[in-house]
Image (cartoon, rainbow over all chains, first blue to last red; front, side, top):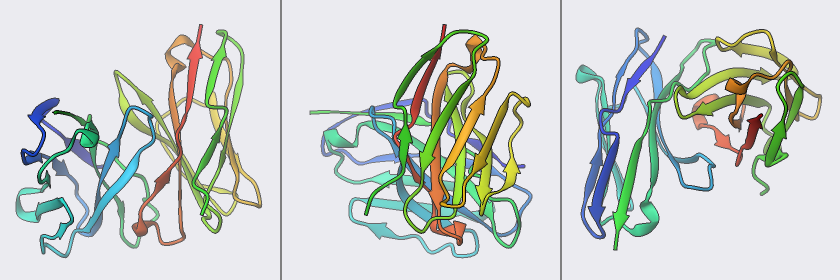
Length: 117
Length: 113
């Protein structure tokens, strides 16, 4: 089974600030995928990024970047120059496990990000 | 390309009734998963269907069931509704290669009174 901890319940920033959302996960699996999703007030979960467990190269995609460290089981997500439209609840989710029938996403409790003008 | 469509968007039911929720995945996606989201428990996995077969099941009572049709559309059913079943029910579809990620619908908000 997998477990996710998002220690930050709520973060408030002012527009244009950079913000990092923390995620620590537990898994006994050796090969798996990690995801970040965003949930705006409309309720729909929006896919942001995907990372596989055997590639620790950190990347940047537009204003998004992530820092994956398998040794510490952390998968942190950073938004650069935040905007009001970034206000949402952000979820970290490991899964599915590669080459297995286990295909579910295990979600953390989420971090609510409030970006004020 | 149409996204994942869930109907109805909102639903109010009375305790003891049953309810059926529908999910139409993205065209070409054969996997459909269902999640329940509540303030107390967060997002919890209900079940996943692939090619009309249930592939995985979460830890929910037997009152929760689902099925998938040959066109990949899926329905979930909750019988003998309880107040605690009030939640946002989210459906997600994915391609055969689940590692590509899941696309979620806007959800059905069920209120049990």
